[in-house]
Length: 229
Image (cartoon, rainbow, N blue to C red; front, side):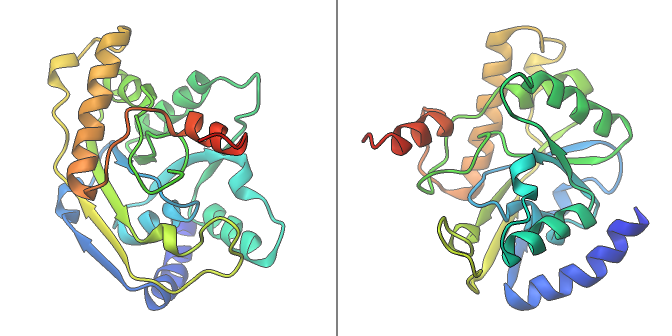
């Protein structure tokens, strides 16, 4: 916590100076106790801005690739993530998403604020894609409230192929906790996880105003990589 606070003291003013940040609804995030912050995902830089904006320390379990230290911009980004307490996980073949969820549950068990991108990967085109049901399992298994969050503008800072971040305004809107009471105790049921996840994504869409796509972002990205339509 001390390292996080010290890093934020340096990083937050610099980030806000470079990228003017407008926030709404921060009062919806509880001041203490476990909470899941569920956000749309537009850019690799999203965790940094959530960490800057949210008063509490927010932990993300992010794919290990985000901690690559290739060029100068990547090194700076990776070191900033580590400084503010973000955790890297291996998402290569053979490593299960359930293992990542168990690690996330441990974070919440310590009373922390945990950030998650239910889409599982960045949106390939700025639209909001179908949520992965791991968030429902995590919320229902841990009992932690899910607070929806929407980012705007981060996709224009560091789009694919750009090495030097652009200077843009950023917006973050936070909504009230999503009511998951109809599915309490049903984390073991696939239909309940799907319904609870859809409720979370509907709340995120209500904040972001994005067009919603009934597909997984990862499958669309795979098609684009293969040159499909």
